[in-house]
Amino acid sequence: MATEKKKNTSEKLLEWRYGLVAPYINPGERVLDLGAGTGWVGKRIAERKGCDVRLVDVLDCNETDLPHSVYDGHTVPFADKEFDVCLLMFVLHHALNQEEILREAARVTRRRIVLVEDTPRNFVERAIDSLCDTLMSLEHGFFNPANYRRIEGWRAIFDQMGLALRGQDVVPPFFPFYYTKAVFALDPGPAFPDAAA
Image 1 (tube, rainbow, N blue to C red):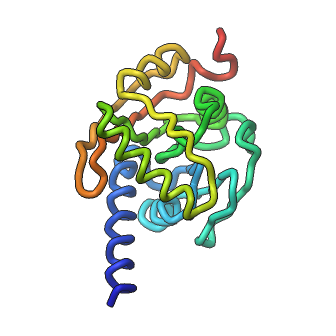
Image 2 (image 1 turned 180 degrees about the vertical axis):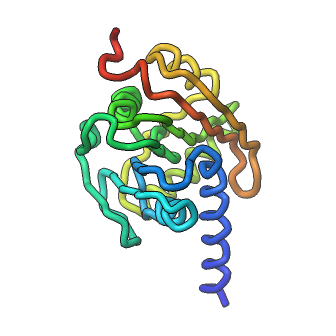
Image 3 (image 1 turned 45 degrees about the horizontal axis):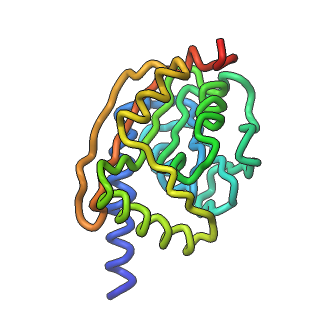
């Protein structure tokens, strides 16, 4: 019974995550899931959208049959503009080099970067978010620097890097995740090839 309940909860969470990014992905596109974790969101995109999905992460936690590459957290092991869409789902708050990762996402992407992030609005949301993330990080064996930004902080980074914001959805807190999240759809163009230009 407990196993069935956990399976149903996992399915609901997967469907919710898929629903956050699905509107920004066209059928048949080539998609990179950067920081893919277990790979289940990428798998659902491949099944529902008929996309060619590749997974990349600093650890191999892949539980699917999708192609997976382990990378060094700095240089994504794919050619310039190789993908139509790059997903970064709840990844960058685990990284200290957020802009470097965004720059690499822009380098390998032709059409759209879809960034989903925790964006706590205040101290209480940040504390709850940090606790949830720390517990999950311990379970999977990785470090959680809790490198969160508010929505306006992310928008400032996008402006600085020349990444044009083409869409934004704000996800209000809900049980048990009592902290705000946001989905950003970005044009990859100006940040590539030289973000300093």
